[in-house]
Each structure stands twice: as C-alpha cells, then as structure tokens.
Image (tube, rainbow, N blue to C red; front, side, top):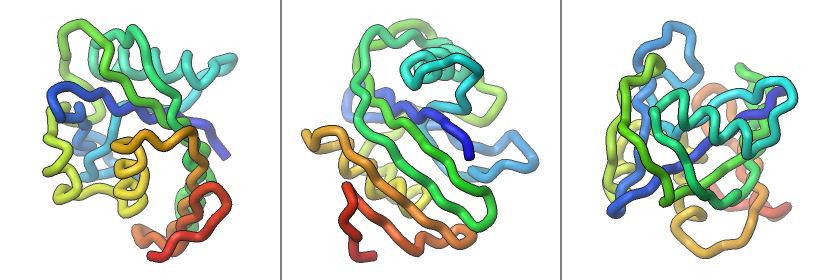
Length: 156
C-alpha cells in the first residue's frame, strides 16, 4: 500500500499533463496523467504535492486546493491512496521531466487522449465545485471494474 499525490495545474482552460513515455516498467506507461508521485518519509500530502510539482516541472505552487482522495485497488499494482490537488496559482519556468513529456492540454481534448478510465471520473469532479470527495476505483488490468464515490457505487 502506498500514498501518492496527483496535482492538476490549470491555466487558460488547460491542464499541464505528463505523457508517461520515458520509463520501462511504468504502470502509467503511455498514459497522460497529472503531476505527482510517492510520499517521502515524514511528508504530508501537501508537502509531497509541492515537492513533486517542483521536481517534475520546475514550477512552484503558491496555493492549491486539496480536492479529494482516490483509492486505487489493482490486481497488478496493489492498493494506492492518491491525494488529489488542483492549483491555478503557480509560477516559474517549465523544465524537461525525466518521467515523460509535459504539455498543456485543453480540458475538452484531454478525455480523448489515453488516460485511465477512472481519471475521467475525477477529472469531471475537478471541473465542478464539488466539495472534498472520496473515490474508490478498482481495476483488473487496465479495465475499471468498480467505482464508488463517497461510499455510493457509480454505474460503469
């Protein structure tokens, strides 16, 4: 079981996304994902989010919203608690990332790119004023088999 963060940096109707194409054994290989990664010892979710954004993009978040927690259950990758953040207040100059290619993607186009099926659910939640949420996503391989939002099953 692991704790991770995922941050969606937004500017002008676009998210800064990472196309994961540089690592060999990567559960996110060839997928488009937000910015984030695993907690280091002693980090809070906020500490991890700020550090990961700085390390992967070169940007510094000035403020952010902690939007929810996503529990991933996978038959291949185990269980992960992903702390989800959103920010429109950041500065700096984007640099190359050793985990993939960074690109600003229009939010309307993003859902047409290769992303995890469950990401479509939380991306819609990010685009609303929904308060803090808990989303459980169960996968068999790459296939989403269960989604539960705030304790209530969603129809797939």
